[in-house]
Amino acid sequence: MTVSLSQHSSGGMPDVSVVVPVYKNADTLRELHARLASAVQRKALSFELILVDDACPARSGEIITDIARSDPRVRSITMPTNSGQHRALLAGIAAAAGRWTVLMDADLQDPPEAIPLLIAEGERGHPVVFAGRRGRYESASRMFSAKLYRKLLHMIAGIPRDAGAFVVLRRDVVEKLVSLEGPEPFIVSMIWCTGFPLISIPVSRVRRATGESAYSGLRRLRSAWRAFYWIFWQKAHG
Image 1 (cartoon, rainbow, N blue to C red):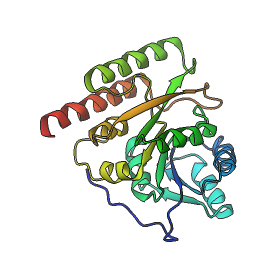
Image 2 (tube, rainbow, N blue to C red):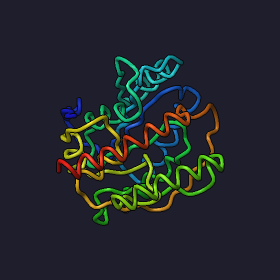
Image 3 (tube, one colour):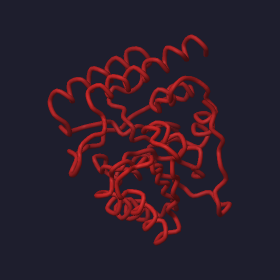
Image 4 (spheres, one colour):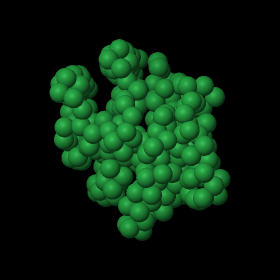
């Protein structure tokens, strides 16, 4: 799957592009925007926030439009149909113009305040920095299955044991990532396929404040399969 990088509308390059897929996150979007802007501005970093509306049937699209109207640093992308988290992420990554691109969810389980810490670690010479998941942020059964899944990813490919979808990517990683061709996208595995070294630093997560995960047990199983399939595909075709 190949995605073309777009040019930033202003022609400039912000320090940071933050890409957030949005699906049924109406209750957290305004807080996410406020906390993210505060955290990044305290470190004197210029930024853009790219909110990708994954054809959400709730009020998320309306709120994205309101936020973008009130803050020119916010850009919106609307997927024509519900395409899933990873295709939405890939669309946002292709639109990102920053020296660093941050991927994160909209549910505020991952703290926006950690973004400067991840970027600071990247500036020390690390092209990919994952927020290593810490804390008890899900039920015991989901924590167990997620830990097992990440352990297998680590054993097979060396992906950090605590890696999730909260990650910072240097510009050259982004360029390589969007050029990849392969099966149904799975971002963490695709990042591994770029060939850049991966590290993680610990970041505490919290339980979801509102709503519930869009990933049922079956969807989690399918997602895990896509993660492993990308790695096996790359080993066979790389």
